[in-house]
Image (cartoon, rainbow, N blue to C red):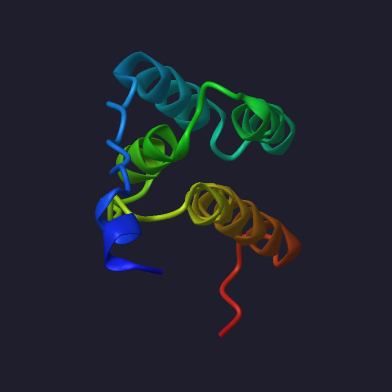
Length: 104
């Protein structure tokens, strides 16, 4: 690549995060946390929603779990969001399997 073509690159400016989308999904996900069918339905909506770009996915992750780097990919953000639900769901299944008794 020549120096001239490198300097002609246009920088892509990040578009601002849509706070309404982030707030709506965070509220829906938190309300459904622990309810596997409800959570998975919302997660499918989130994954398929074309309005949810990388910035919104990171914003949802940051509010739903913990602050995340702004450079986190949409795929990684969605995996971590789903991971929180799966971790809680697995814990509940294990607890039910031992009848609430300690394994010790």
